[in-house]
Length: 316
Length: 183
Image (cartoon, rainbow over all chains, first blue to last red; front, side):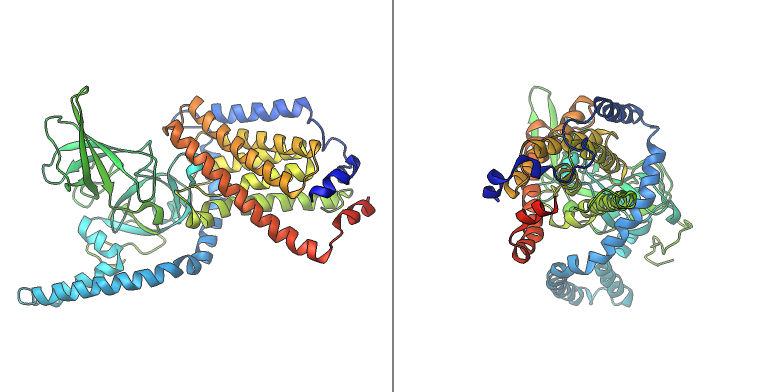
């Protein structure tokens, strides 16, 4: 290749150019028009209610189904390593469950208990029961890359399934994030770990309130920063943090995050003498690099095009 | 590269390019995240724009870069100010096209172009985020992500080059003379 480069006459390089303008400098008017188009896109997209949103929705209607289709097509390949790993995990889990069952059999002799324990393996059913909210199952079909410096994902359910912006997204480990916008068949979810994400949290042990801020990092080192409203209280290592949640009756979610969803546990606490404040670092329960099946908290009895896991664990 | 002299040929090519960009977008958002390293995936859409620049020059690549970037800005799960990738990929198209003017796009030149364009594209995107106060990530974090992205892009480009050029060279060892004869 290198040899051919030195020998080839310069004209040979341009053998594909019949238009002439294809090579060389592009016309100044074109450059100007494109730059102006970029700038106007940026200007139009400022603020909460942007003029670009209809365009986003339109593109989402096309790209969302494509992502869902490709995601479904590659699922068998993607889940291959998972299959072996989860079988081992399940075996270990089953062994421990059996041991637990044996120990508890003297106390609990109802078949309900075992049935409920087994339901844990099915994932979301138990999450819905634990949280006391109806969950709409969905799969993560698209992930925003780190190059965009935002942590967002696409899920394969949208307004046709009864989803709306600001709904809470969980999986069976804990809080995942909230819905930013929906199209008919897909929704964009802002992950908890995004640097723009702020969640009201409550330390389970002391019921102390605070705010959790993402760091924009996913994977094993994903962490959240917790700042407590009351600076005098010091959270201790291993404390669990759950969502503070907005107002709303039992089983009736409202506002961005519903109450009582586990977020993570305190891994370290450090105090800044200058600001006289306590900051805690939280390790989220959810593994954000391996999101697949998630549940969206929906009002009980939502009309949907797919089955909803009700708060009592039944499928409707 | 087909002969672009006919109208039907250019319309077919437009459809082909649009399909390539859409396929690249889906690859980038749905398939590659499963192989991501720290959340960084190869910029497949950027590679398509670089390829267009190397094959057809600045003008085509700039227009393609703008539209491909705008698609990247609007398609889920994007959640940044629209126009940032459009600007970045437009510049990438321009630079890739200029490389073609200066030197013969051999494999080495192509890979160097991919590396430079990947760095340029990601950096312009990151910088525009800073100017618009759209991104809360710190500069060292962003630089790390940009560099990992460069490595990814060059790896994917090298793999593609090996897949495309490897068999071609074995079948037709004298591509160069072919090209000259066709002219």
